[in-house]
Length: 486
Ligand code: BG6
Image (tube, rainbow, N blue to C red):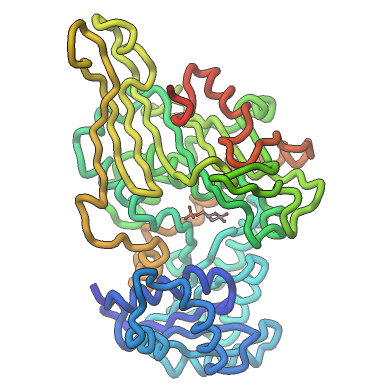
């Protein structure tokens, strides 16, 4: 559906990696699908290119390879380029913001300022926008990481909040834009079937994994000062957890959904520093082999300190202190250079209370729901069935829902959905300040403990599933990670 409103989309960091790989390709896809108002304009803002011609050349050279993998229609691409304007801007020069204002004032529609820059630039850019009156009737999009800890994230939010009202601020967590994450809401709140079972009486444990095969790529410098807890847990994993565990919202409007997520984040059992060894595992990859290719150790990646103690893997046991979930362990896990690229949620239901059919029915995980978010979105419900033949032997079988077989249309990329939401003023899939604070508050004791200990994380070979301690943590609860079954 085309946006009804025109827009002016101003992209700071217009020649950065994110603009190249995600934002401009997503805008192109929205354009190609006819979802952007014809009069909508994109204004690239950067320091490097001298003028529009230079910027268009950069877009042609750098962005084109990332769009429409199934063939690019040159005419459509040309029309996309026609939407693009450019402003060369040096952040330290007030007069450059005057030029930006003049350029933007010539254009019509909803104003969006997308800050695809490092977080240290968020506040200066907001101040400079306000100094030329560009904060009025505008939306501002902030990319993660938003801060380094609770204090620095509060400092950014306070400063940005003096210039933009909360309803003008769109904090991106791209996981919230993924189709399968949307589907999780549909599964939970569009079907009465699961709801009665979705609670402590029937659920034994839940696992949420985001595993990557990739290492730190060209981002060693950034990553080495960040680590997996800040990069993935504080945001993506805790957002997924809050969607899995939230109460049914009253409606899908932005605050109803975000209020319910916030309740979960606030109900996370605080981590007692004395318990951290027991409930948190941190690892760092060493050299190894992934799908037959040798890959180097994290500490030898460009930009990474040789004696780095930054974690590239985290596994956590989390508890939620409310009636629905008290006592149910949620195991969260993420890591780079793991054996597979997979993001999935595993809900292990309790076994039958008494088995007349032998011990198989008493096995943990005999009934389990596996929601695979990527790759190949599927939902799989495991049950026990009788094996054909003599006797009563039970075997695990599953019901499968493969989305690509049901729906032929292409999935919309997360960024495409989120950018359209910004343009159309829909806040539901963006993180509200209080959610973000609650998430930082919860991870803070772990961050502090790890920083104080300054100990090397547990090593794991690239191409494995992380340190053995992550398995031991689950074993204490009589369970194991999904891939360890059998
Ligand atoms: C980003 C992290 O937010 O998410 C990256 O900064 C990570 O380190 C990426 O690789 C994973 O996203 P996706 O969509 O590829 O699972």
